Figure 1 (cartoon, rainbow, N blue to C red):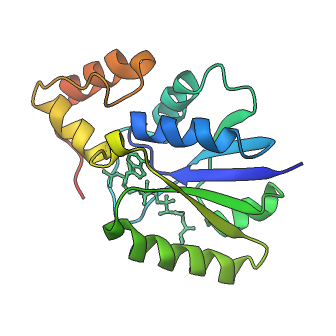
Figure 2: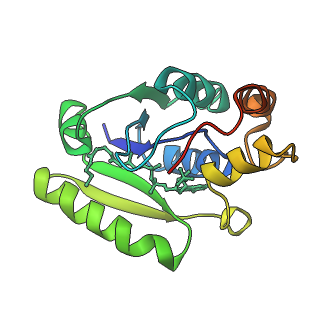
Figure 3: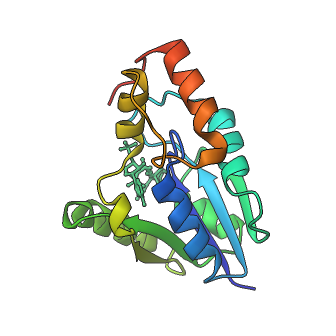
Length: 166
Ligand code: COA
């Protein structure tokens, strides 16, 4: 059974993430979307909230499961018997950082390959930070996040204001 892992902060899930999840789910038997910690970021949503949003967004995709993990991605992949990491690439500017992470993960776990899916053109500019910024300023995030979680994200961001930072 081919298990792949799609890791990220998902703070919160965007339409771009869901696009990658759908396409990656078609490439493996089991896709684990894992909410992880990026040392460089102070998240707006708790890991539990991020998982709940992801689960709702991925409803109807039978081979997708959502989990959270607080250690190294390479260790997590080993625990799950996964040999593939899925990442989305939005622009050339993503490449250097992603290349570094892919090599570091392979050094830590030599069985692990990273597969990059090109983000769909309509999501090239999208990021979780952009979604939070637009929502915090009262803008419309329709189409930027999955419809099933739009209202929850809006309510949460407008209630708590701009409390995150990078
Ligand atoms: N569509 C829309 N947005 C996308 C996207 C897509 N297809 N792909 C990425 N993004 C956005 C993300 O939302 C994120 O936005 P933000 O900066 O506003 O939060 C940004 O692009 C960067 O995404 P990514 O490169 O995936 O970073 P991340 O913070 O989401 O995830 C981890 C990084 C968690 C995977 C990484 O830090 C990690 O592996 N941590 C675990 C510890 C570890 O193993 N460290 C060693 C790694 S070598």
